[in-house]
Structures are given as structure tokens and as C-alpha cells.
Length: 271
Image (cartoon, rainbow, N blue to C red; front, side, top):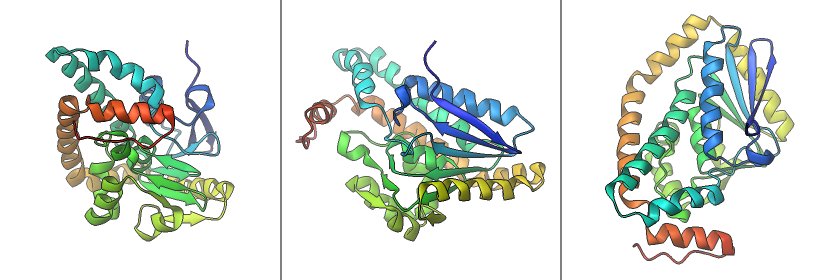
């Protein structure tokens, strides 16, 4: 069996999910996505849990996709020219998207406590939660454009309802890093605390206040708020998955992966 990718602790009606990652690293691999779905499915079915905090098990929330593991996954698909390879990639993207959907559709309130780096898939996970709280050292980046990928796990669909279209376009098209001050100013985070410990404590306190309310009403509020958003998000996710299954395996992706290994800036050609 592979090592656990998460820790789950409980304090009364609040469960805290710590993102341990492979080897304790704050990255996401295929096992991470599978265990994330299983973890949140179990929490959803547990009536003793009324709210969930999501936090990094270490100093960082998440560096996003494990690029080294992704390169190994994409290599055989890149070499194949038949349609089956594209279908396999489409199925992989849809599976990973479904994992984040499990988080977003949890019937209980979720609060992300973001500390340190929150990059790429980390942003997808944070924005799948209902509320985000950050420490002053937090840094956010919708980084995918810099690694030759159209972000496909939900940030393009969910962030528009959080920070607005203009801010989303700027972050997604540049791939720039933003600090906690900027994240708070554009509404990406609800509250910013001076230290990681204070951010985690504030997230737990907020989750406990939510958990004190009627679970039936909390579920109803989330259902009502998602009535408009969920179909729009799903349509966007499906389109992004089809786009990436057609165009992700590109020369630019190869260049991005090579540049990552060689620790240099990529030289993209649009091919």
C-alpha cells in the first residue's frame, strides 16, 4: 500500500484534513487525487462531522500537480498518435476533475486554511472550499499558463464567482504570484492572519461556528448557492477537459517540463 496522502484529525464536530502529499511533500499525484475523493466521501457520510477545515500538513498548502510524476504519466500518451491516447487523457482529466467536485459538493461547510505556497492545483482545491483564510506568508498562483497547461481542475470556472472576471483573467493569463494582501484585496481570501498558526486557528474557529448551526440548513444553503453555479462549472470543466485532451500534449508542454527539470525559463513556440 502507498503511504497516506492525508491526515484527518477531529475536534468536536470539526474535522481537519491535512494535505501531506507523497513523502510529506506538498504536491498532488494520482494517488493524492484518489485518496482525496475517498477522504471527503467518508467525511460527507459521517454525521458526527459538521464542518471541515482543509490545511497543509506542513508549512505550505500545496505546490499543485507533481510535475515529475505528471511527466511520466504524459510521456507514453505524448508518444502515441492514435485516438485512444487522447481518450485516455480525457478520462484522466475528468477523473481528477471529479475529485475536486467531491470537495466542492460536500454537504458540509469547508474552510481552507492557506499557508505558504498555494499553486496551480492548490488553488483549485482552495477555491473548491466554501471559504478561504490565509496567513500573511501565503502566496497564490494560477501557474498553469507558465507550464504549458490550460488550468483544468476548476479554478477557471470557480474563481470567476469569487474574484470576478477581470482579476481571474489577469491571474490565469500571466501565471503571476500574488501575496496574501493582494488575495485579500480581490476577495480570494475572506480573512488574513499574521501567522500560519493563527490562520489555522481562525479557520477552525470559523468552521466551529458554522458547525453549531443546523446541519440540514447548512446543506440547504449550499444546495441553493450551488443551484446556479454547479451547472456552469460542470459545463466549463467538460469543455476544458476536451480542450486539453486535444491540445495539452504539445511541444510547449515538453518544453515546460524540460525547463522545469533544468531550472530555467521555458521558451514557448505555440506548437
